[in-house]
Length: 102
Image 1 (cartoon, one colour):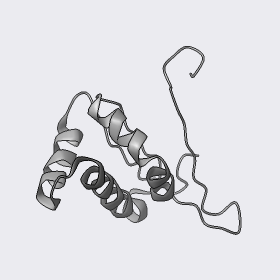
Image 2 (cartoon, helix red, strand yellow; image 1 turned 180 degrees about the vertical axis):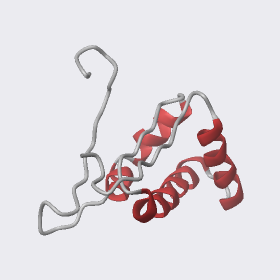
Image 3 (cartoon, rainbow, N blue to C red; image 1 turned 90 degrees about the horizontal axis):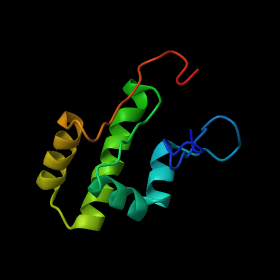
Image 4 (cartoon, rainbow, N blue to C red; image 1 turned 30 degrees about the vertical axis):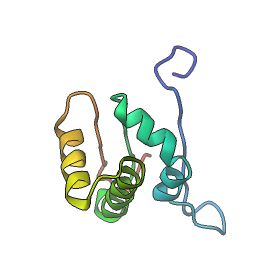
């Protein structure tokens, strides 16, 4: 997918594959400025994982990144994320599975 230009970047986070737990929100924060720039350009944003356990942490991290890089308030970042989800250009997706991404 990268070679044909459909995927610019893929970051992974595996919380059970090493002694140090690495979660999606850690990867998001590591690349927060770039993530914010992409969102402003209408990037498609997909998260693969357990919606019941991961969604609230990722949502909070996404709002934190938006606030940090845009100066938006809590309410404005909430509205921004809601618009992202409803938009045809940007997608936030959680997959509810027993074995996420398998």
